[in-house]
Image 1 (cartoon, rainbow, N blue to C red):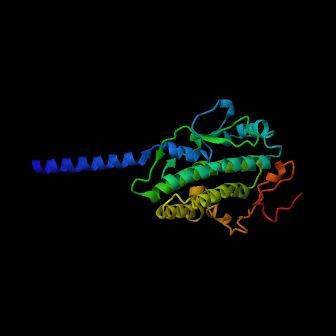
Image 2 (image 1 turned 120 degrees about the horizontal axis):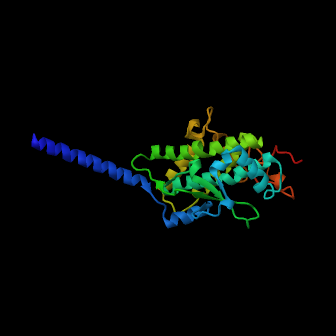
Length: 274
């Protein structure tokens, strides 16, 4: 009986120890090299003054979003049209998708991208208004033994708990079609992954994983992870390139902010000039 109890105790202690080790593997931090790589995707590791900060939650609040449109972005974007400002804001915000998915696929690191953990950090001296992203908590998760489930969680947090909410709020406030806003997001996801897949510093095994992640995000991830019902909202934008350019299905309205009527190189053919 004593031997049984000793064995039973040792078994459960080993089981508990294994669980603790698994938990330890799931939490980590970004290395300095990884942080420097993610700065290219506008990661900011130091908070700026509150006057230069737009929290993720701010974008969900009607009164605060109206203030952002009128007082903070009207002059910077050279337009007072809400639908144009809304689209340009989402084009800037789309970099969070590139940033978080890059960390997921290149480093196996899951950044907490929930809306309450994110803020936009602006630079008053930047004439193009290209804000960076600051995360209150930059502790990250790692896959542990189940990368598929971990990847699902990272993607769900990014889209369901952040981007889908931002798109819904801006679409309603700015009266701009969600199709335009989702394509604004998709464009930067395509760009990031296609750039990543050309990086010869990755092994063949890593490139296969990156390609699988790319396909999952664009095609296989179920609509529930994006807060939609019918389909993955990104899949419709995966179009063949023409002369190395993937033309958009929708116009992002950028030309309405340009004094010279400049167009994006991806502007759709059906987008008629005024």
